[in-house]
Length: 340
Image (cartoon, rainbow, N blue to C red):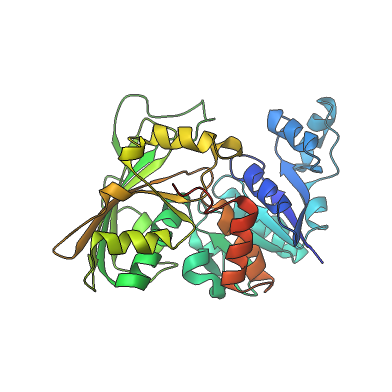
């Protein structure tokens, strides 16, 4: 028996979730919902996904564009066991109230929603078991996912007293052409701390303070971390611990990884859409001074949450243990294969 998954919102995250679900032997995509008949909608049909109108009154727009739809969002969720809502921020919460609760269907929300939209916020490494059997779960944002994965491994191996992290954030995703920061650096927010620390604490018990800046790039986020450790550690100990986790990839400037541009160029050699599901940590950034760990990592905001969206489905339906689910997801998406 396969879990029937509906994807509401077929954009940056939604199309990647749909493709990832299609790679799982225990899941299937029953449909994707779009708000307009654009090129992404046409690509969805070309891939064989059944197309639905996310906004009922716009169904005729799809017909006029030569894209017949199977029905509306309400029709799609009737065929699903769970909906992965990849709509823009706040829309998921509206869909929950309007459609999902009414239909009695389980739903997964993304990090752009407030934590109150769900029973639990989720990261596979940090709190898989808390999502078992739940009806509404929120997968935390790209930055929070990246921080949580890394800090979980560090905490498990060395303990953590305190974390201070500076986040240098891409301003928009590559396809966004209506907004962006062109010539400046923006504290975001100006008042400290940023929301990322409290968001990490929804899934991992750790003392963390974060600050964030937006910069005019679209490729990746970069995190600079300072972690006070509880146990004594050497840089090589940290390297060994990080290498043991498939969802963390270590690279070095010696191999030519001098910027996020080079990381993305490497990713173009590896996967469709140059997706990097892993945290990318510069190995030569890892240093320990007076038992304080310093390191720098890069996060591909378009792809890093995709494995979590797969694992959370198995948790919600109690289909596999944390270790089993992560292994299946890693193998199906090729995670952990490309460590240099």
